[in-house]
Image (cartoon, rainbow, N blue to C red; front, top):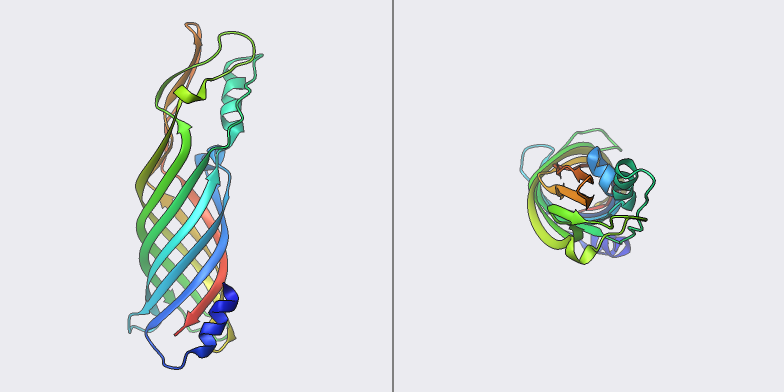
Length: 227
């Protein structure tokens, strides 16, 4: 992809108000989100439009990332609440996120470095291939804890509001092409873990609270093409 971008940049002649680029990176969950999901690789493409005000570009960004559920989150709840028992719980659940964001990028005139700050707002199109449903979950009443997942999980898609703030630096590589390094702090108004109660019998159960509003930190690098 980067080679194709370089070839395209080399073929350009006329100056336009548009710039575009692509990044790869890593999303690191923060807070409670990091207790439930592992970090994931990010890919994103973006379009910049010069506002005419020095250093200010408007942006449109589309990304793709995936997070894997931490089985130890649930196993830890079992060990904490059912002493002497462990779970054979070992699924492979994933959360897919496609953010579509608009915003702005403000660059500063520092020769050879080109630092900038960014702000974005938009939506996250989320897909849970599996997660626990809200409500009661029946478990084996003796021995090693076992859950019948077919009756306890759901596959759902949701859309959540989000915003991000960040910054970075762009280093010139060749005419019209810059190498971009950046970081972003991201927020989503999503529910990433439902409230559920695991019941073994009338005297043995525990409840996992609903967890909302995940935040994560993005580190990314890529190329920006100045048309």
